[in-house]
Structures are given as structure tokens and as C-alpha cells.
Amino acid sequence: MIEFFLLIDLGSNYSYVNPNLVDKCGLRKEVHAESWLVQSATGTKKRFHHFIRSYEFEMNYMPMSSHLNLIPLGSYSMLMGMDWFYLDKRKVDCYGKAIECLNDNWEKRIL
Image: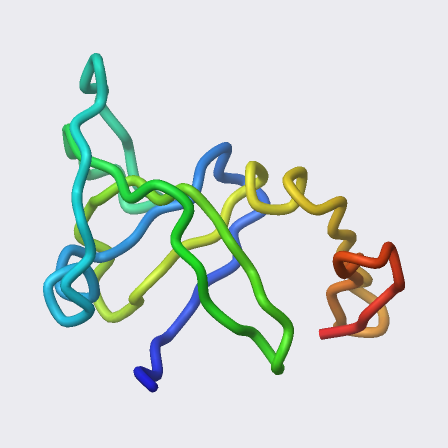
């Protein structure tokens, strides 16, 4: 099992993975039909061309899956954006500091 640092960013439309994690896990990269430019919170801009289709991982023993675009993320392994929240109808409880998810049986789980 590989541990990684995950950043949840509600201001990001898409989810990303650090190329270091892709190399460490031996994941298969695919090429986007068109590349595009991404601007980070610090203002730096990066163009990316590759993505990982349906990367599967566990968070608090709950299986997760997401498409991830490859882009350097500094000290983070992955950045989960709004596409990840939409995918499995996840909700953020800022007051309770929790993420509510639905499992395959549509049962509510709290992360």
C-alpha cells in the first residue's frame, strides 16, 4: 500500500495527480485530445497533456475512483476538485469537518 498526501480543493473544477505518484505506482498515462493551460493559486501556469483514467484508491477504507490530470503539485500527491465531488455525490460538512459519501449500496459514509 502506498500512502499519499491529498488536497481537497473546492475551487478547482478538475482533479490532478503528481507525476511522481504516477511513476511510483506504475500507472498508465493517456493523452488528452487537446492540452490546456492550468493556473495554480500561486499564479504559475502549467500546460498538461496526460491523464489517468479511473484511478482507484481507498480513503478511510472506502473505495474511491477518479480521472486525474497529470500536473506537478509540489508536496501533494493528488488534488481532488469538484469533478470528484460530483462523481459520487459527495458533500462537504465544513462545520463538522467531514465529507459525506454514498457507497455502492447508496448508504451514507462519513470520511
